[in-house]
Image (cartoon, rainbow, N blue to C red; front, side, top):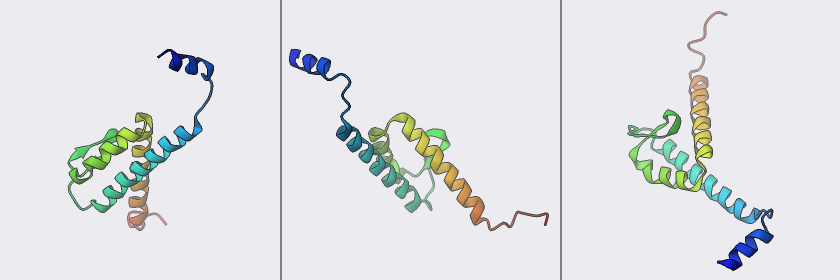
Length: 103
């Protein structure tokens, strides 16, 4: 225990970028797997609730748990908001302008 404290006191300002990189990559990988599942299972009824009102089917529950475990809570919330925003924009653009009038 004393050796650990001595190491921590000597290297308090040292940043282990390899650890940060691996954690970030694991977060991105689990995020991509979860959102791929959402797209693949989009025809199923969403029964689970995530942050910011995101709904997802039960088939993606395990991938959601991995996503939440590998990423910081603030990142999960950010990625959920970004996904919802992009989905809304895509839906509006795919509408084909049928609701536009005035020209």
